[in-house]
Amino acid sequence: MGKKSTRENKNIYQLYREEQGLTREKASELMTGISPARIEKFEYETQEPTPYDIIQMADAYKHPDLCNYYCSHRCEIGQRYVPEIEVSELSTIILETIASLNEINPLTGRLIQITRDGKITDDEIEDFAFISTKLDEISLAIDSLNLWVDKTASENNLNMDLLRAEKEKLKNNK
Image (cartoon, rainbow, N blue to C red; front, side, top):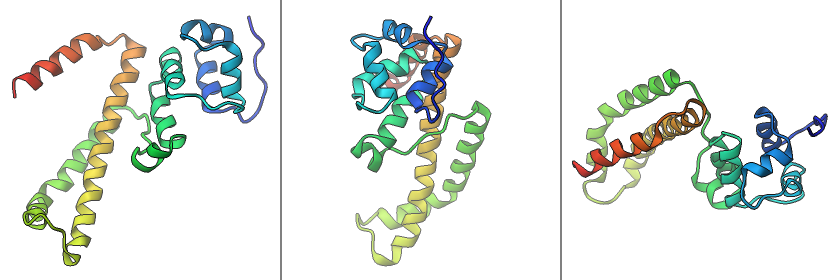
């Protein structure tokens, strides 16, 4: 059994590993091609993990949100285009989604007016920016729900194969 770290200012990689009760050695055994020494380098920030490393850690540590963290904080493209998603309770996510949908519903007519000519003019910018922000909130709520499902799947043995099959059936029935 490895020593328990007493280091302050632990980064997210170390916190998530320790949350699962894993030593670096045990964590390494759960991953492909990542040695305990490499994990230590990530945790002490002497080496930046690759996206492959992040996926391995997210699976081993049962924290799919680690992928979102990496994309929204460490990747230059992600910092521009990927919002940080907070892991919330399902009821909170659903309430936020419904509230966002209720806010956007009366604005759909205005969105059609603004975009039907294929241009957004200066006098339409303010309304378009507001609507776009509301759509971003809906997108974030959906991303949060998907992250909740991924996290729940790893914690509660959710049948992801069945969920994927059902979603695929629905896509094919369109």
